[in-house]
Length: 379
Image (cartoon, rainbow, N blue to C red):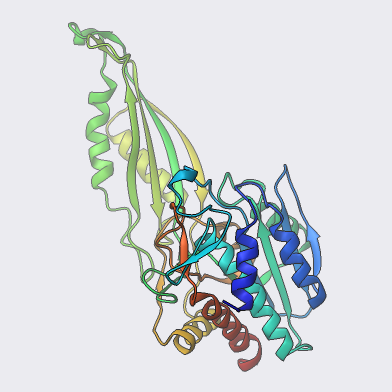
């Protein structure tokens, strides 16, 4: 297939970039951006490669964000073709990172090339925020770049992250936000004793059970136009010595809130502790706030994306906030409007990851039309 987006994506997929390795992807992308007038700034930290590329100083600033790292391949003998040797079969391109998210990176580069070819001197700024630490711990990637930009007082007006968001066909769903993630490790204390003499101890599992049942049944919020209601889920419970004749001295419960903008982490913490206190438990909690929720409502970026998808794909897209967290949770600190738009997500992280070959020019065209709508037509 002779298509610039496809050719660039194939080159990127051929790079062995299992997280946190970049594998040469940013060098390839940088070589395309530099002739367009982008200044390349590497903000590397703890072995992670991060690229901040910017062209122009005039507002508004439109940024494409994403990651070059991919998840491990899994057993190589399970792949029909080698994961870093992209191959076309039956109209699909196979390889690790095709869906998540090297095809989107390629499409964003070719979209910017097409936009600048048509509007070489248009007064605006364009940027790329790329990392090799999204699929791993995500502690030295996008968050490191955002920290630097915040310290310099730089902000982003519009951002598109190329995460695979489509469900059945390209463009049928985009993400206009993500839920927050608040985890906790609850330790309920009791008194260990011989199980034949329970009156000499205090069973923390028995004491915790009614409180856990109430927490599971609690309506934390009702969500809103874009978000499902907040959920509280237990992920792990551990208590006891392994013996059948010992009342345990404590029980540990690991749990997680996936919460909407209808709740705050502080409010959820307060409400959960009030339920534990009502049940008179002796407990400790260690909290971890993994991500705050973010949301881009209807407005210039969402309208431009919906119009572009309708024009290129002939369908109306769905705005959604479902799924896990993304690097958008970091970018939201400095960005006014942000969307995730990418290819079909069906094979992400799977053996024989792939996307349809005909989606490459379409995805680039969607990104290009969004740039046109926001930066030219609306002005």
